[in-house]
Amino acid sequence: MGRLSDAELIATVGDALTPIMAENRRVYLDHSATTPADPGVVAAMLPYLTEKFGNASSVHHFGQQAKAALDEARGSVAMLLGAEASEVVFTAGGTES
Image (cartoon, rainbow, N blue to C red):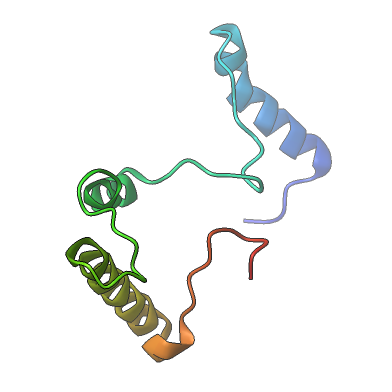
């Protein structure tokens, strides 16, 4: 399938948005700023937002639970990327790295 011309692209997007606009629904288009979390990610994170919320840098039980989860996540990401766990660095946001 070839590339759509600008006119075809505008028509396609317009056709897709027509039912949304007819229902007067809002559409979020600023995904470069923030993106809704995938439901699977929310489910995986929920225990760490409600029960296991310790500081991973702390030596107490709650902190060690958080550190273990963080280490496991780091290992999983490294395996997906074909990297070493020590090469994976998590930051709080896109501008922090």
